[in-house]
Image (cartoon, rainbow, N blue to C red; front, side):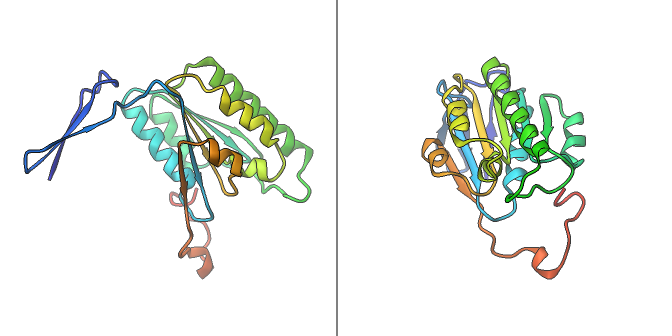
Amino acid sequence: MYVLSANFTNLHKLVIIENTVGRDYLIAPAQTAQPMIQIYTGNGKGKTTAALGLAMRAAGHGMKVAFIQFMKGWEYGELRSAEKIPGITILQYGRASFVSKENPAPEDIELAQQGLNKAREVIASGDYDIVVLDEINVAVDFNLIKIEEVMELLKGIPERMEVICTGRYARREMIEAADLVTEMVEVKHPFNKNINGRKGIDF
């Protein structure tokens, strides 16, 4: 059994976990001075879900989260949830339809560029503790935005900000620049049983 104790009013104080044997383990402060980059990629389910979980955790500590969704325009459940959780702002830059990799519509390219411009604005402002660039990896792979633009964006992250990039097909350049990379691997999926996406689970 572990007892977690923390002073939520000071994010820079150490968190101490005490186990039943009596040992204390020190965890690094909740925020470090240097900016951090996380990448959630791979063909398995859970990349956006993981980023949403991180956003909810951060909001619980009074942190501000900007969640920018590329290539998404559907009314996902997280849009409604964010309205009920102070500190999380979700912005969508996509249509409520699938994007063709071989022949993306001009509107898809324009929306992705708008999302990138908003990401530049949000990151440069320094007003947020965490910025999630949801599906930005796919936007790069579909040539909606250029990898050079994304790399330049990631180089300008201010101190104490954490940026999370999600989506399949993460480029090698982004992986090398990241501090944390998680690859979701599909072992089984209901789609293989002809089960469509389910409300509250997949959207």
